[in-house]
Length: 323
Image 1 (tube, rainbow, N blue to C red):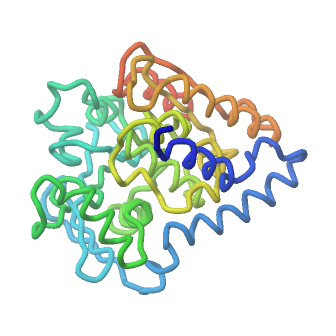
Image 2: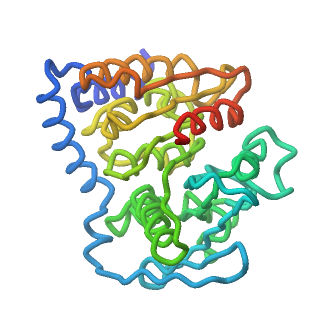
């Protein structure tokens, strides 16, 4: 007889995963359950601890396109604003995932030789959208310099924030809210749409779940069930949020943002967030939206690529909300 932890981990997963929200029997029960889990999610992400600092957010313009947001004591991050020549009146908060060049890899020449962003921020800009792109902790320059070089980004910041009772994904969600606030107060921009890809898709899901007020949300190349993605294969440490199963599976986290209009999009050849797992999530979300009487607000699509943005599908989705 051999030894392994596989069966144990499967048992614990089944034991502590919250009941799927799709099993609620009425819209009222669903809303009540969502409110309860949303409150619990804030605690899991340590959002209350961040907000309790009572820090006054400060915004400084660094250059024509770059702003510096001081969000917490000793913690500031850059935000880039891409302004179209012919604005359509809508602004997108664009949350990139892991990129060797940080947030700038999404809209600069660097990194565009790889199929990931496909110039989506600039394509949105060309389509008339103002695009706000923040650098999130653990990416780009927001790394712990005094740490082993290969682990000073997500790993260092994930592990050390947990040591201090915080959560890197909670800090990223907090940054996203700060970027929305700074866009409004310092830049005169009302953020209408939310887009996140890969690790940024997780943050988009969390921000939407926590009550972010957006006309529509796109979660790209993230959303496969935990059981089919981060459990059977190695992912970055920031994906493993302690106690997240108290909220439920990936579908339940995303469902906390319902009934906002949502597009869940993924590549058929995505190896790290398999489309089979995304289909599972989409089926659960469809049930939740149906229970809320908002079937028309949820869409799911699979494009022919892999772990990469669906440019035309995303722009087409947002264009549907232009008045």
